[in-house]
Length: 356
Image (cartoon, rainbow, N blue to C red):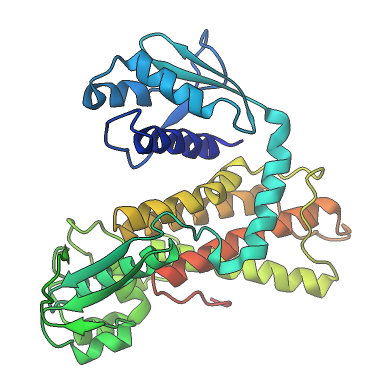
């Protein structure tokens, strides 16, 4: 179990406690776990019970006990203890780590672009309403894609007739006018330019990234830096990481071998494994909070972790070196990273080229 897995496990325990009416407090968007400090108990610690104690009107140790009972017995968790004023301390079964990493890589490759899709919003019906403004339209459409990827139903509506140039940005509006039903208003800070102006200057992919990458309450930076072909440009970095992952697969086939993750072969890439494990939670959080910027930032993190792995553990043999089980495992991990990047870009409505 990775720290990301543990974080999601604790968050799920909080949701269960709230759903069962054992805990009356708002469910946080995420739960932080960190390495236990010297002299502490277990492998990881979490202070979420202290965070929830006030809203729940309960002592923190009582909240921690409720969560402990719902985490205990989870595969990969050996022991859960309540310490101090209400800290949760976890001892993990590290022998299961290799198996879980192997299973996750196989899951990504099997599910493809749908890896991370879930049922977080199953049964929900959403209507996102926005003004006749390009950023609001792009954000609303992207949020609806994220919600549908989590099992929700819904539609987008616009106050007025759509701008004809929105179609070139991949924006569709299901209805126009203000329907007589409760609405969720999508009102990010306006872009300050029309779709046509942005398309002419930046093209569709850079425009969408520039509109979606900042949080809705922040101004969108839509300068020429979005077109720079260098790793200082986050959009280029993400797309380049995807293209490089695909190139590794092509070169491997040329050398006569394919990806096959072998958990006995050493792939020391904890950061990359962790961000792949985080991907389903990020998609669920982006949908729940209607915040596509969370997904964009996550893709940047995946790209950085991919390049760190790529430099430290080359997936292709060099010189006279023969392909080994380690190379096949590394290639599988690289292809899984490329798949996550492609799937995330697809949800943002941005292309993922095979070549850059």
